Length: 111
Image (cartoon, rainbow, N blue to C red; front, side):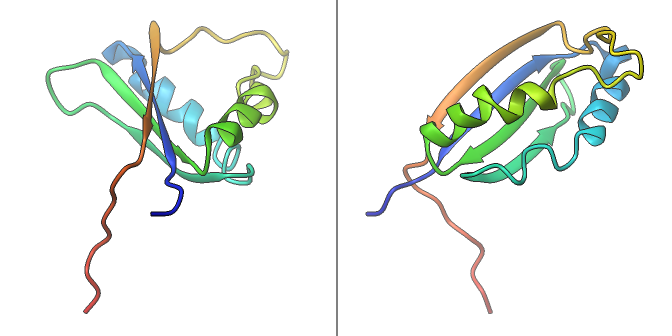
C-alpha cells in the first residue's frame, strides 16, 4: 500500500453570534492554502445541531508539508485583515487540533 495522506481537524468553539464573522473571515482568505505544497483538501464545517464547534478540515500529503505550511504561509494567512493592521476580535473562543493518518479511503463508483 502506498503512502496515505494526513488529516488535520481544527475544532473551533464559535458562539452563535460570531458564526457569520468566522465564515466571512474564512471566505476572505479563500486561496490562502490551496497553493501550498502538499495541500490536498479543505472544508469548513458548520455545526447543524447540538454543538457550537466548527470543524476546519484539511488534508495533506505528509506531516512535513503541513508543518511547512504552519511555519510559513499559515502565518501570513492569519494576519489581521483590517486596513489599519490592528488585530480584529477573535470569532472563536477556543481551538483544538486533531491529527489523523488516512488508513483507508473510498471514492464514488463511476458508471
